[in-house]
Image 1: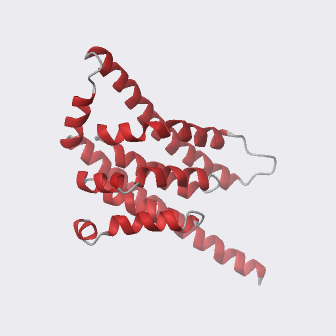
Image 2: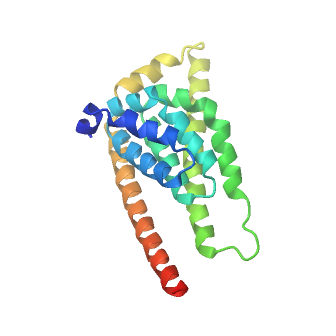
Image 3: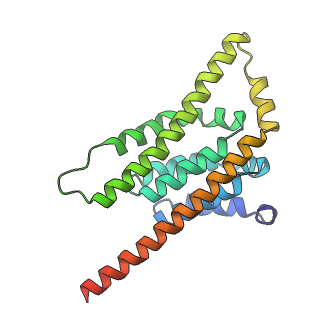
Length: 203
């Protein structure tokens, strides 16, 4: 991860997300890469935020609402990005209503004759979105409470939190990144298997 950062990998990943907004595979790969880079490195998280990563990931949620894999990758990358960092959470708060909109989109009931597999994937995506929304809503509530208790000066705690992430937060983020990688490896294998089955049926 340090080598990728030194080589300017984060700006390259983000540039790809910005250039190929409509390509779900690029968005998926980019979100997974960012999640891995952000999982245990405050430096990487700050770099992703500096180069516009939060906005691009939220944009992926909107652009690819029909792709459960992209939604899970982007939402969990966003969770890893803000985990343990009050400053970055505060930066993402204006996007809360967009995340809520993505939740409402996934909550729409499946139509008659819907593929049970796709409906299951939708529920997985909805779970990830709800986790992200809860993270942001909790941050907003905590921020408001801190400002009320401190006479409106709630930024000092957020700043110190960003500079010294707790060890348990880092461990949790690292575990989430590994789970994310495992999940998408299984999805890729399932997709390959489905494609092979479709080709055999067509032949």
